[in-house]
Image (cartoon, rainbow, N blue to C red):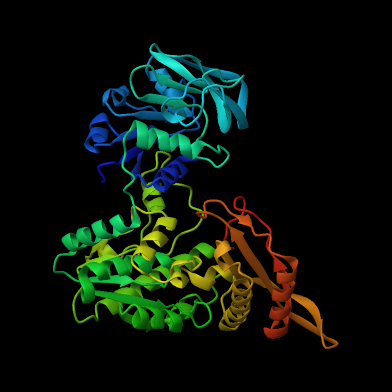
Length: 515
């Protein structure tokens, strides 16, 4: 952990990851931990500052999450946000009550004092914020004073008179609080004295040292998909141990058009990685024959991948001691979240189970990073933009874009349509503006007319979404002219397709992928 680390205690807020992202954007290193940590565990982390997140509970409700009040005696700055502020008040002798008028949405706060998080704002001025609370502070603890207020929340922001303990009833981490980043920066850099040293270059330097220390003289194997995460993880490990890393790329028969050749060319010829490319398409497609259930598809693909990967890794001339994975920080956060494991929406295809089956030790060089930080790290190592800004592609590949049975004929139709979409999206300058854009082969046939003849062919749905991290997503408002051109090309050029639709659903309630 950096000497300027900030610890964020999670009380179950939907915005906890967003707090971490905002802190990281200020180049300050932070970690999210569940609020159930003991005081000694928090002390052992040696944080420079502490942030208490929001949460859905009421502080006076039975079983409400809490924290040891000793955190306020650690001698470090503390910032409570929403529930975190109410808990601060509750633990230090103040009073919280049900608000007569709950506040959800935009509000304007009047600045009373320019101090702590409010140092960048002039007393007497007002600023827009985003509220989301049903309780409010009714009485401040002794030694606390007001920093800002609204007509409905007289204690919208508070501070201890002598110590660096602050509370904000609103959410500075959301975009709807325009000066929120300034408030967090004032708290972290000025009040807490954190150093803005969480840079991609420093991360690469530290990671290479850590990887060398972990692997020593051993050998490592990496399941390379061609995506951003596995590519950056592989390049970090290569920089640390050189040719003692071998990457295994498995063609599962569910890839996009010419993707297997492109991955081999990119990582073997451009990046000079030791790459073993395996064509296991027949094995995967045979296992998926007549399988319709989406969860069963994912589990079959995961199992076959593990079997193929293990078989190929055992053929290597140098036996691997370590397995490299592109695990990201959101996955780590989910595993330690105060709320516990989320409901399973769908299984994720990765190399789960391999470390135990092959007796390998895990190397996860990206486990502290968010997706945007992974791209920054890749750029710091000189990786090209076309690799780093590749849109996410699901582990199960086109299997989750072919609802119903998977056939070679259907996959060919989907690949051809998807290649046209990709060409047109890139030509129109939208590729990097979108989180994902892809085609789905809808498991229905419709009547059409081509050359005065009746057709009864496949339907292609286009999905294009905008998102920051895939937790939520909105459908992209692509120009009608672009959609018309894509539709015309797919219907005219892809044999077996006579209709194109555009998916205009958001996440939630829909998912980005169709399965």
